[in-house]
Image 1: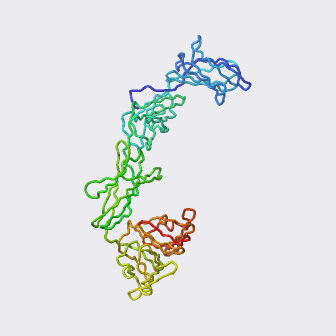
Image 2: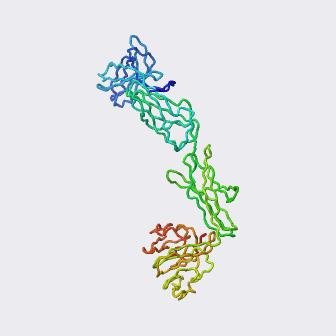
Image 3: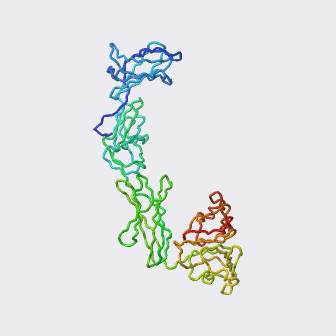
Length: 526
């Protein structure tokens, strides 16, 4: 196969053949194994004697003599007529003694074993040979890679023996970090290309990156190579955005309305620098900084919550679009944008689904004409509306012959923040009402001790947390046609029972509130 001709210097650990002897080590304790002297030869594969000054270590396989200094190390010495390695060692009879030799430049290495015959002198001859040669192919220096991609790092490995493994690591300018074991993707066991998949998600930006490949052959030879020069990782991905919204989403024309814009942002690689909103929905720009108000984990990311509070006013109806932009902290200053639309209206329609039978409803708009005749259109004979008055009970009006009868004056006016029972005798239908949104208005509803029939006077749904100052055993009931009541009760600082079946608190829906504590005002901003 064709390979890079410019082989670089390798850091290689290989076996060599040595002539050596181990001088006996005096016993220092009863449990210490006997002292031995080991001698032998160290030669190249062609029989030539290796030089002096090479590192040699002696160890005992499958034994733990560390208290006695294992492995015993030294260097080959020239003492005619043999190369003599002198170092203290201990072993029991039948122990497997191992000698390992490395050349100073770690190009040659070798190992061999022999069974200890007992106290005295034993011989182990070691033959040393060259180990593998490694060349990092990719990335080898000068490349610019994008954080968040999966890169196939690659190295060429050639050796006299079969290559058993190649492990890859990367340097980020500060530390060496594991990539993992490579796979031979082409060539032969003694001459092949090895690759590993490197997921760069979470790696810091920088221009001091290096790749190292370390190869091991079947004889225990080890060699490694590092990229010729550094390469760069940069953040080229946009930050992420979700849950862009505004409350209220609809405002009245010619009214100044407090309004809050929201967005959640996250960045996989470097982090969030700034989030801005263009408060000029027409030509030109008027950027305002959004403020971070919280964060939460999701899908291995930390999402940051940003908001911007202001007041707006429009002189004409229409949809007004505001652009939110987020920028990360990368060198590239990647950005992402999303739009949020606010609707300006004079009056607004709202649909309430009415089923045959019992319905709990509420009106989330300020009606220009709050009479039953104008508010509850589409009524049929025997349809009945009930209003609950704490301390007095039900007030009702029934429909027949084109008008409302009974106590319509006690049911009227049809008000936001109030719940109504609607007993529908006719078929299912959509009740459409039209009025002014209460967005931005502070709503105060008197909650009496005992039973209350309430409605949520907003066009935006919310959670049970909108019920301010609940007390233990306070209970909220929601009526689901065809299923019956769903309830949640308060205790110990939270809602219990079926809160997930009561939530969300929705516009157009009425709720029974059984108040156990004293009377108070339920207060919120529509």
